[in-house]
Image 1 (cartoon, rainbow, N blue to C red):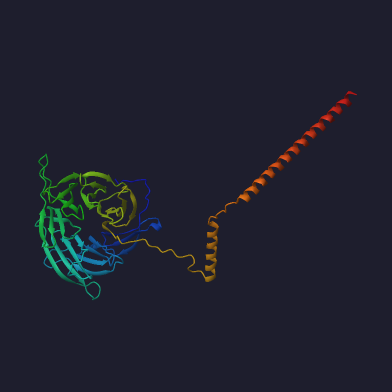
Image 2: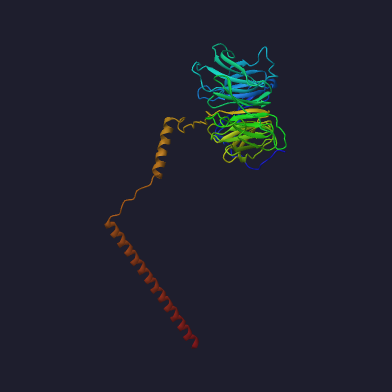
Length: 445
């Protein structure tokens, strides 16, 4: 059953995210602090077509001309602008002699951010991997011909598995190493410069009941962007494993998380925290130094989580999945910041780190005539003068003596007035007494 919460969403900081769904649409979501921090869909790229389902995505969010790579179910790979969605070029990943794209879909895609020496500014490098293990790294240069065409330069193609199906792949921060794993395929690492395998994991031994768990990796990532030796992988048997290639081939740390398969794993910027999402919509963070559960993200969660993205600057992560919601979370409090319903099953989400909420406020006197500007300036000056504090002058000794004399005279005058009032009152009393005595005398007579 879906879990609910009565907490109100406080809103998001200024950010920009791009989501990809099963019907081939790319939606741009923006949140601005000036508008209350509520994320909204501002653009939608593509057309509704289930045959163009987005299987993998990668972004190069550089400041100048950021690019976005998308792998579709038809076997086509599109490279487009991350600003306006214009398609720069398309490349087919299908081979004439190979299997059909539906039978050998793309599961791993990486758009290299660092430009090599032999490449120009109008070139890019793509790494793709399919379920059959066919991996290729191609350098592509955009030509001056009409949009949608490009020339392929150097390319390397190799196979990362002899049997089984690849289900996950990841490139490290230095973009020199890549890991692959899947169903019947142990985690293995490759050197991208030489296209050679440098490490392969070893399956764990049988448990106490003499039961062997078959190999089935569903997600993977590097624990740190600066160190390629530590790998975190999630399995179909709801396990999270930490591998250290400098220590041993078997997992260094292994623990279970709930009872459904792990579907997504993403690392944090601190180098030891990972975020794990499973098939039942559970999202949690773990400290991989000890395998301790730091906490679960509580909110309106339902459906399998298929992608988790960590913002490169803000303390925010995004999650999406089969419940068609994009959710934004605060990693410190693990509170739900906001959620957006996007109608289709979501497959991936990425952040655009160069987005900034810059709204220039129009000046008050910009559209006023000259006389009005003068009046406005004069009123501002008057208001400033009225609000400025006024300094008081120090009183001289002569002024102080005069004030004292005035005060004494006023006191004396008040005393005289009080004395006169008392005399008048006494006289009135005496007159009243005399009248009473006279009346008494008349009565006696």
